[in-house]
Image 1 (cartoon, rainbow, N blue to C red):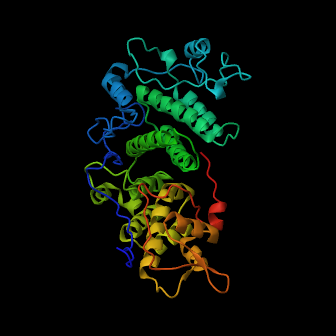
Image 2: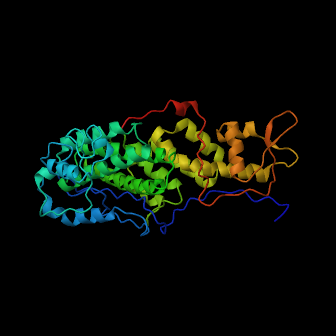
Image 3: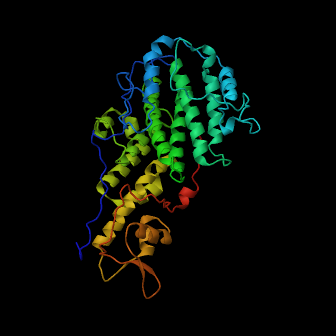
Length: 417
């Protein structure tokens, strides 16, 4: 309506059970042994596979999980013997078919690779009748393969989406080999932690990529992140002794909480409050979990200043990578509140707004423009935001342009897989 400003926009996280995506780590089972045990990979409390309710037009990895779970009883005694990152037979076959990724080509030759370059591809369907021990890599080889893949993450020779796609597929193959051998020792815990880190960092980097397939890559990456995180929680419990806790366990539990910031990626049937009751008390009292719960509360209540400044001062790099997509949404709330609640004859200085939102001043002006608001310059030459504007918009799907959180602390962040 002309002459009236719109009420402040407030982000509303959705914790209902009707959402289309699942962030529900399985309830830890207490029936595990320390090494070769029942399958802990991507399972729910009763041992059934985690179900993915994504729409049919999205590519899903649920089919291969079903294959593995149905056939797992037939291959419980399987112990891999392949000494290479890729079985010789597969490497030779892919050389003949010119099915080599750019990272696997010897001297750039699409028909030639080597044991030090080829990495076993993920196979969507597996026949246990023809599966040989030599087709599966033992734990030590899988660890070496994971090290090799993690070292590729910072490669700049190719676009990041190409790097991601290769590592993404080969890590799924690693998890597949682990699942087929039912290995769940503490060494596997470390491997899964590194794989979860990869998916979080990749999601962060994919947001800065452009291309027609980025949306699909991001979707599938989030799908595998949730599956890997669910399995990791099972592995923690499988290797727990008395009240012990793994070094990074609290931070990885906090990732699950922070994933609930995104209203488009909400859970199954269980609310966070019920999930919290099952989390061990020493994890609930940890600094990492206290931070995650505090951030989620600020987001839900619309405390935009506390949300932004607490994120800047307390988050780890990986926590920030998960929180980052929600920062624009919270900034939109702040802009809306300033526009709606400001005094019309007195425009709001952009320099003040830049400190509030932790953005560069010219990024604030661009952000306001993206939100449908006009900025102006006062008599002293300072940029301002006139309030009570009626043109404020909230684009469907949110603002897609990335505005970094201005922080010297974040510039010093680094993480190793």
